[in-house]
Length: 72
Image (tube, rainbow, N blue to C red; front, side, top):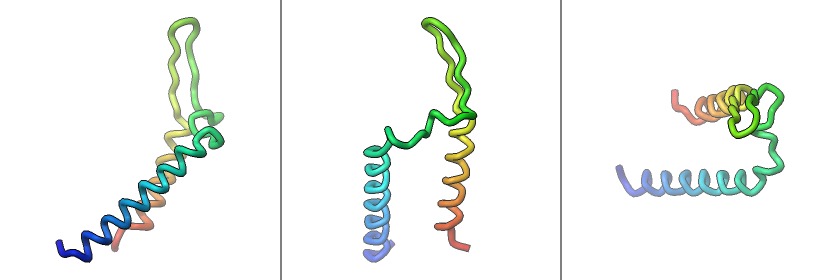
C-alpha cells in the first residue's frame, strides 16, 4: 500500500462518516423502522418487533451501493 492508496482510503472513510452523521441528524424524519411491512406483536411488558420491510429496503440500498463501488 502506498501513500496515494492510504490518502484515497482516508478520503472515502471521511466521506462515509459525514454521510452517516447526516443520516443520524435526519433520522427522525426518515420512516425507517416504521414501514408498513414491519411487524409488531405483544402487550404489556413484552413486545416483539420484526422489521421485515425495513430489512428488505436496507438490503436493496446496500446492494445497489456495493454494486456501484465494486470493481469488475
